[in-house]
Length: 150
Image 1 (cartoon, rainbow, N blue to C red):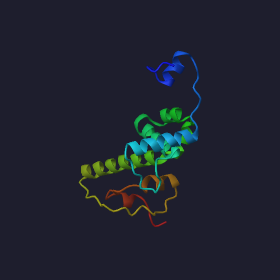
Image 2: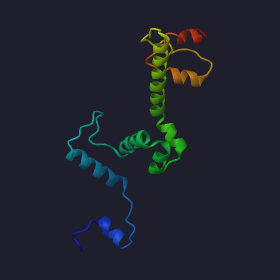
Image 3: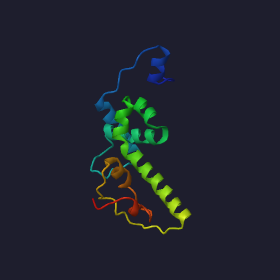
C-alpha cells in the first residue's frame, strides 16, 4: 500500500466511495481531539458529543453564512434550521431594535431608561412581545406608545 497518500486521497484517486463514519467512530474522534487540545467542558461530560459538535457547527454556519447555507451543510430544511437557531435571529433583531431606538432618542434629545418594563408585558400580538422582550434598552418614548397594563 502507498504510504504517501491518505486513505481519503486513495479513495478519490481510484473512484472508491469511502464508508460513512459511525456514531461510535465520531465519538472516538471527538474524544481524542478534546484530549489532544486539552479541552475541558463545564457540563460534566468528558468530551464534546457529536450532537453538541453539530449544534456548534450549525450556529457558526448560521452566523457566518445564513440559514440557507447552514441548512445545506447540515442536510436539513431551511425551516428546521430557522427553528433550531431562532435565538440567533432574535438576538440580532433585538440589537438592531435597541440601536434604532437609541439613535431615535438621541436625535429627539430624549433621555434613555436602562430598564425593561416590557419583559412581562401583555401585548395583543405574540410577535410584538417576542420582539420587545429581549430589549435591554427601552426608549423614553416607547412606554407611552404601548399600553402595558392590559
